[in-house]
Length: 176
Image 1 (tube, rainbow, N blue to C red):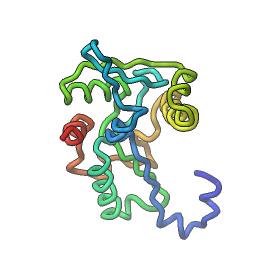
Image 2: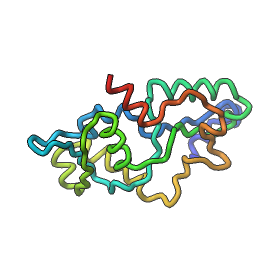
Image 3: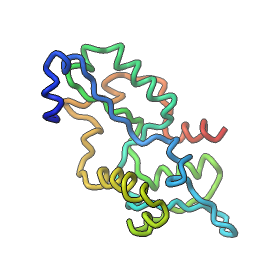
Image 4: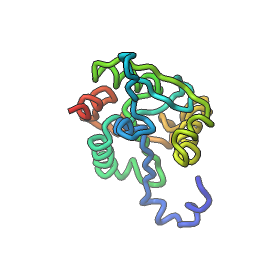
């Protein structure tokens, strides 16, 4: 645990739940993640600076799923407080699988293209340097994603969260 958090005191820590969000499908609306149509090619490309097989945890539809996780946290304080971490995700996936789910739902062909950090930075300036590469690198270099569940990390299964929208269902909702 972070030393600064320990300084908060055990009374506060006893009431605390740490909440970690997976990659949400709404990210595809941001220019850095949005698939781009290639005129004349009949397909879309997504340019990211990480391998397409990088393991990531997908939250699905954030506007629906975050509330369902929060509700489960609040209804089960005996399980979720005391400095426990809740990892909010619906499925383990990869950037390539996310793109193919988007393509399937939208009836499009799509190709995932990994670009180097220099190219990505040239396209997206500060976002290319400060945010996205660090987020994806964090996922890429873990042998097993600790947020996927362990003794001190609770998941949807531990909390019996119901009604979550999967990544594919999320893209359906976002399409309309």
